[in-house]
Length: 309
Image 1 (cartoon, rainbow, N blue to C red):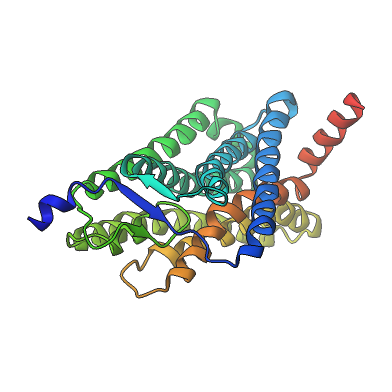
Image 2: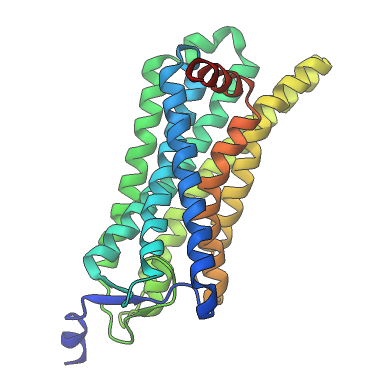
């Protein structure tokens, strides 16, 4: 009888961040500013790449795709969080919860594949410059981008399928600011061991594969650059790859903290801080990191501003 009643539960309460009443408006304004900067930065970067023919090369196709995913991730999480600051009730339906998780899971996985693709692109550009146009053809670049998006969709759909086997009867309170998969496991009255195993296997495999791709690519880049013994070549390589390495380190660091060992007993506030970092902060930082350390992007931006002023 308990399980029959549990299947009828179709609403959850997102507790969000616990804060004093006087912090409500400052926190709302802070996250609103972060969200607006994130959207303007990422969509602005996409528009810049779209409108400048000099940026119509593989590296910026991948960068534009990454900016789209970051804007999508931020909109998925931050928009709901901002509304909840002043909502009388913080209720989210089961269908809305699954949709939000699917959207965030798709974005996170796609970003992993795109970061690995960008590392491979830098490897070909620096280690095989004469063959770069032959290897990184438009067809291959489009296939890599589409594969990243399809991989993200499939990964999220698999977890949605396994989530559908869970029932919720212990509680409908989610101690989080959005519907993430780990808090759902905690309130399930169905044993989530299979789900935890799938997260470990699938998320772990994707992260290992993409991290190894990044590390191998940049190890070969470093070996090639040092072999040339040219200070100018070293500076150029680090200028090109430094931003990507910083972005990769921040993103994978937070993901490894959150999902590689989902069975560990982590506090709710630690979960939320890790999620906050990769869903809100990294989408904010990426366009800044890539724009400030990329001469072509800054030159294109300066040209556009001169044209419009």
